[in-house]
Length: 443
Image (cartoon, rainbow, N blue to C red; front, side):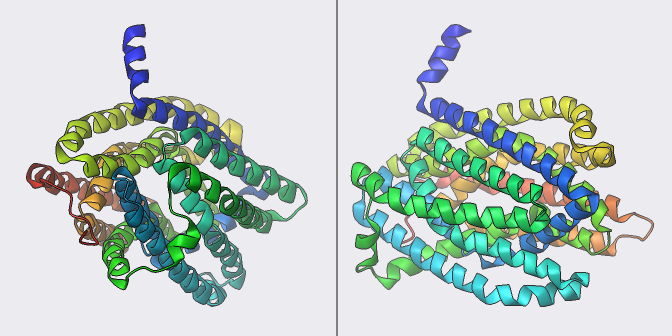
């Protein structure tokens, strides 16, 4: 066993994964503590209000995403794998332009949020709170790229420390504001302040990292460039955005439509169950997804034979880790839930088990999604996601009235997962046929 462990630790992927896992455990602990504090300080009604705000922003926010984050991560990693300085500048230039456009969209939408919330929920206050969430999204732009750069460079220790410092900062700040009686406003304000603080730090640190690793500076990126290159990345970003936005609708879209027919306290209970069911994904699968998002494009840049050789191994690691953590969660959460959140939240155990079971299919997407982005085939995933969302929502609204809204929600989610799992079939065909990587810019 020790010899096997030693051989595994020699693999850089395993070492990087272990580093991310340590950080993810800390982050997950902060997330659990945050969730418990929110539930305790806000109570069932206040937590329900918080859940409604997140449901609204989760429904509207994804449509302002142009796919810049995923496109940049994919093709910046590929260019870095080839040591192509010009290619990296092109990708970074695209990210800056796309992020500026997305931020402009958010700024235009923000004044409309109180009107939308008044129409949907009869409360303009929900829309005003949602404006703070969108402000945090805009402020996150520099921070997101800096973290992507660290991930591509595989500086996992630095990335882990940086992200967890931000998490700790926000946790401490939100706790202070909650104790001071700020309620939901304090929670959302702490997120915006943390985004501003750490984006500023990221802008100060990036030049040093860029010089040390041969990455393009922001100043050199802003000079020159061709529209054709931006359009090339934009075309891929368009399909990635559709796929990502549709993916982001899960489970937010279903929580949103459920929020239109269910009381806020019930929505809060369901959200707690969904959050707890997402712990195995946060603990294990999210780290693998982050690594595959940069590793798969880098491997593809070095040759298809090397990529095919590693795909099965990556998928095996994802399935084993995610399933093991899910089983452990199924045993521990039902005992801990009422103790940590209070007896009033004990009913959240039922949506927890439903979502935990459905999430067992997620390791498939952790490997497939970066593959589709790398080979500019994201439209396949986007089409299936659209079909899954349509089928799930159609069932929710058109099913017989004898089925309760909560059971309609569960069945709609099951339909969504089943349809999305079909993505495995075309991906197998792509791996058999592809002989080389075709870049979006035509280089």
